[in-house]
Amino acid sequence: MFESKNKYYGRKKGKSFIRLEHLQSRLKLPTKSIFDKIHSPRVLEIGIGDGEKISEDAKKQNNINFIGCDIFADGVLRAIRNSLDNNLKNLLVFHLNIQDILPFVPDNYFQGIRVYFPDPWPKARHKKRRTFNYELVETLTNKLEKNGFIHFATDNSDYFLKALILMKQFNYQLTNITPDSWKYNEFNALNTKFEKKALDKNHKLFYFSVRKNY
Ligand SMILES: C[S@@+](CC[C@H](N)C(=O)[O-])C[C@H]1O[C@@H](n2cnc3c(N)ncnc32)[C@H](O)[C@@H]1O
Image 1 (tube, rainbow, N blue to C red):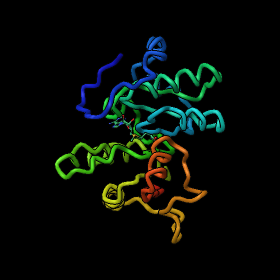
Image 2 (image 1 turned 45 degrees about the vertical axis):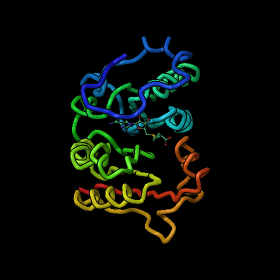
Image 3 (image 1 turned 180 degrees about the vertical axis):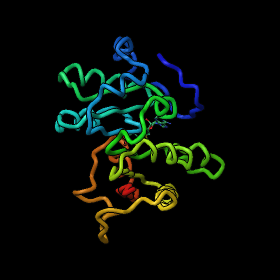
């Protein structure tokens, strides 16, 4: 197992780890040459959680190369298992903090970046632990191609507003704005584990999609 140099406070293993740990030998470390070999279009997902959403999307959209990461081992190993079971050639996942991967990624590389239900750290004293912060967005902006998108979802209104403010600071343009575009609806629904959890708790859900047109 690779240990991240960057500090992370969330859960690192779950109940399914024992069933999946034999797949650890399949884990890869990021290198410049790994990224050079992956063809465009390339979509990054930060915090793949249980690994099911990225696996499903890789299965359905085999013209897109999906690259995902998480510090939570079970989901990364599950995505590897899904990839082997379905012979997916367009899915690469890292058991690492996103910050440990980006130094190996060329600039203007991704056509899209997805951040679905990042840990909200709702307490005021914990907000600095949030992953989607100024430093990360600054780096991501360099790694995102012109016209690339960032797609963000959360059930924390404060995180949503802070993320939108960051998008404005970096001159992203909102796409598809309608009175309903922020809300959970059939077009926004992602069917991730944390979206389902938030719906079960009757939380309000918030979504945005922005484009970097420079
Ligand atoms: C609340 S879960 C959401 C998971 C999934 N996206 C979903 O919607 O079900 C947030 C995930 O982000 C991961 N995560 C948090 N910070 C991260 C970071 N810096 N790099 C990679 N993954 C991170 C956590 O380990 C966790 O699995």
